[in-house]
Image (cartoon, rainbow, N blue to C red; front, side):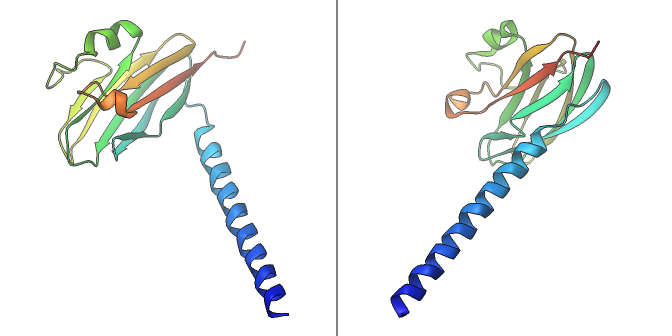
Length: 150
């Protein structure tokens, strides 16, 4: 009986842990679901462990996003958002800091900064940290621009 009771307890605990994991994953999916805008909206992006959080942001076409970016890492980072031409210009990561340009902000360790960007066309716009090897490490995200209904 003791082995059976132990096996049943392990099964119950394993099921609870798995179910809890699914609940957390569902909560994360739900958190990423809202479409922001139209108009002007503020999105806080936190950088921790060389990752953007949230990684994906959804906005309506015609939305201006004010990005408030918080660098919680002990090293420099940047957030560059824009079309492919902007990312090609930054691929080498040779700019130590960015002047106040829409869609670009550079941050030292523990700093908070802001930038704005207008999302006028449906599609996906990339967010990247172009400092050396940061993009390769996975410091990327996206803004999904949803067409406005009818």
